[in-house]
Length: 310
Ligand code: ATP
Image (cartoon, rainbow, N blue to C red; front, side):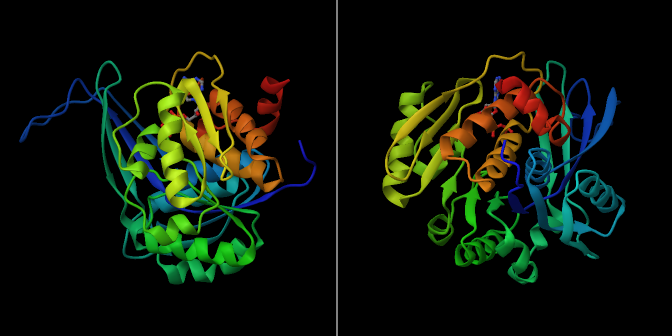
């Protein structure tokens, strides 16, 4: 691993997950006794920032928290992971974003998310963090904050030579200006299908590559497509493709695997790794994360990733 630290800036979301286990979803008007409750810090932005920081990047965050107890927990969590929270605003009106998953026996999971303060992040908030974005080697974006805020961040980054990496999740149609400002898109197969305006590809990297080439042809942007246990397809802007196979592990919880992948990818690109090397590293990091429970908490430290790569 390179001795110097890369710099990653995340403009993204916080979501406090309040997870209930219950025999089933209640019917309308019914009160049901659940079997367990747990609370986890999460949100794609937060998870990716934690993963990047643990991968060794000097990481900063731009986002909005509620001025409430959940917000205070996130501040503490950011500091625990050594993430610069100077670009995180306390929102007196919108509370901290929450996710309310109900887990039924067998692991079936349905979730309501209420983004709250995340949806109040503005281009002006992003502008206030201009120096953080300009100082970064890599800007990491997802789609859980308003697209205008992401676009403002991408434009600042482009102007400063900061590489823009977008994980288009959860998928929503992207304004062409945002795609044009990106250096790299990191979708999973479902998000790739959304980008291509096509059905989710049948199993197999070949079908994924066909769609990825279609997106490259239309937007001229490099793609890294994550395919769960199968691995990762890399399609560079010059048309060169390669497949990084998934690592064989005992997966117990794949929640947040994509976030661990993106955070590690950003951290390695930030120290100057070639795209396929950064992908191999992120693939190893995400394969560790799926052997552990939780989203952000499952992200490995750099020495753990180095150990499985030896
Ligand atoms: P999530 O939404 O659950 O965070 P995702 O759909 O965005 O995940 P995936 O493609 O499922 O992303 O997984 C991201 C990466 O995590 C994969 O490319 C791979 O590196 C790793 N990974 C996921 N599942 C497994 C698995 N079962 N075994 C090994 N590695 C895995």
